[in-house]
Image 1: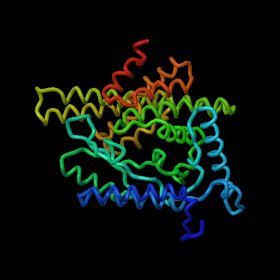
Image 2: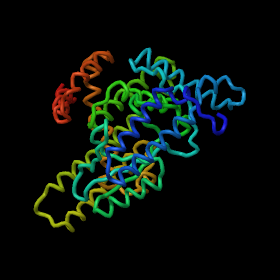
Image 3: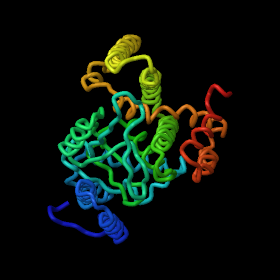
Length: 366
């Protein structure tokens, strides 16, 4: 892309511009200066992401595009085609363009939770409802928000995110932040984000993320198998097994902390001591898991950042409900269309009603 060139077709046409205008109008109904600041940076960040996007077809045909990037973009096209033809995930206008943001993450996301609660702090957004995170296109802005929340007594966690879905509001581009993922990881990410565009329930983060995780993982297994990538499939399944076991450790730790916080017989100081002990135990468990799998769990890297209620909430959100979705798919005989049709019946349900519905598909109930 030539510097300073902006064209309607590169941001999805007039429809995308209209949507940006709608987002701007939403700001007029907000009175908090801090909230206006948040949405302003979000609009600027989204505009940068869209306006700098270049059509993948042109990049692949351009002799000045590096061979490496051409190969990676070709892989994206292959994955998109599989998503549409085999998984029922519409990819038209999605991931047809490429943006190099010149940074390592697309956004930085803030999570927060009280000191003695596993329930995450939430924010309410127009059109999306209540979510348990806040995204910023600047790491410093995210850290500033985390500091503000910490000053209120909340535990916080800031994590870099390499991709996100705009749920069809915009034509999402491929980003430099994930283009160099290994093939299996790239496929899982694209299938995950495209699932959000097919089914998304307003204000139900745990349900949406677990659904997208389940479909992303199942889709990746099918893609690797269908394309004869047997070595990559074996590696993916092995890594998935390790990841599932590690997620189970995190989930159990969070459950134990929830039970601790419910106790009435401990002082705050005593509760802090037990909490710290349980988190140390988590590290011991993670080190044992890593030894069992040839030190493939990067324990030191994981524990380089504090493990607290906010971080546990951010991690377990993606996995807690996955087994129920996997079991539902098995009951559907692997038929993804039937699977999606069952899930669509829950559109008008509340999050609590969806949890009750999903409990009918827990593995333990079989």
